[in-house]
Image (tube, rainbow, N blue to C red; front, top):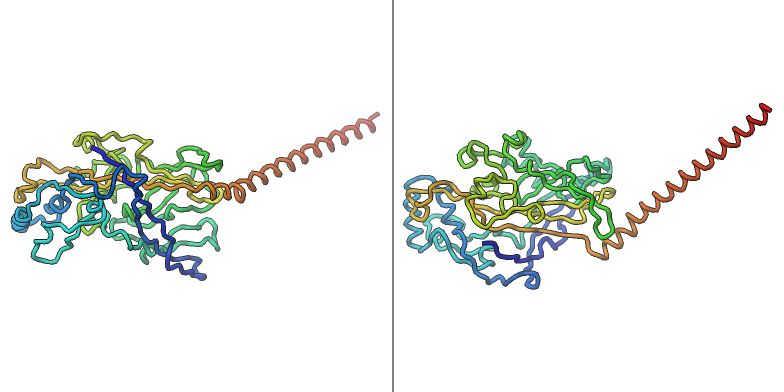
Length: 387
């Protein structure tokens, strides 16, 4: 059963540690992370409780495949009175809690568990992006992320950091362009294609949407072959709509998808009740003003899932018959230009562009009239000479 929404204001902090490199025409920065709970936009409080999958127990069989180790872990799970499911508050589930099972492990392991732990007071970066001073088509394109052009998570071109951070794109965006951008949340670069013309507070924008091909299987989209990192869970790389990002989550069995498994394999969706994927609520899009390349509105929608594997040595996982990719939560991160900024944008950008268009039409009309008048005069003079 879906509950929510619970709303937080995120990424409200300005970029920090901004430095300019005049030689290669780049600027570097980090993006601080912060989240503030908004009770007025939420259905409850951070103290609301949920019965959810026990993240530590569910991941045990994946992280520790040795049968002897699993026997030891099983005894610790039973001793801590942990089971497949647990009851946690929203605040604990999102931002972290001390897990009783992990606290009993006799060797050093992280004992705090949370879907977004750690988040507050952390930074994403360092990003180094081009300013476009030497080439306007490179504006906002990422040169390096954390000092590298590659991520070390994937093989081949899948591992490249491509495009921008999606906040803006090089100017003069055309509908035929494929907008590439990097998302650290899903540990990869991705892309969006034109979907529709939209009027945003009087500003004409292009809506670019994340296509189903982005998370397709290599059979559907051969370009995705290097995002398939194992053969068993993916059923020889035939499952689609989910992305295994364990390599960038310290080996934890985290899978990313669109909400409600939108555009995912039917067999994944059919394992759960109450999921109803639809494009309007669950797709990701960017509304980009084509002249400037600025993203003036967006909706980033992602679902966080955990792989749960059966284990004969861990009693809590013994009854499972097969692997399950279990949804934990989905997020809808949205943003839009404010009314005052939209008014200023219309006045300073779209208004002046419309005025230039009007001047262009007037000059063109005057030119046409003068040309017609000249031709009429010319023909009249020639007619007189013939007489």
